[in-house]
Image (cartoon, rainbow, N blue to C red; front, side):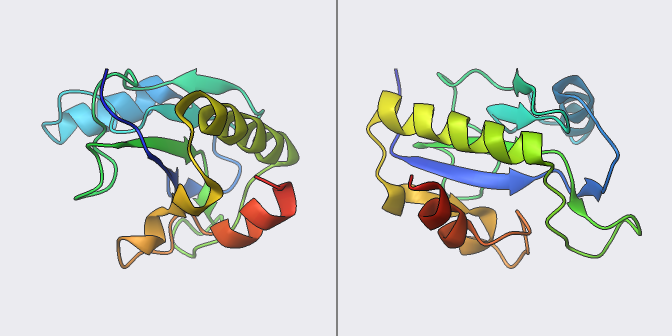
Length: 140
């Protein structure tokens, strides 16, 4: 098993209210020539958590950080116009994100200081919400 010491949170950059599955994202990523979906977990609009790439395999979600991280992606992240960054998380997604991150922290002994948004490592708004505030508010 690979060493895991970080969680990186992403959004799918899909318009608000448009639900897509892990299999759809897998097809997008494979069309780019990738071996599989880049994220380890996908959180659908209804809060359902879908398995993406197996956790045993390094992800393809954050350049330079994939080797020892888990990539979690919620569906959404942009306004209905399809381009304006926006926190589109549903209440169900927020609850599932909190639960999933908490479980991953416990399972892999990951501290709150090792939970990051994609924006920490790339010039992007992703995941389009303040991860530090999320950690503080949810007591992660």
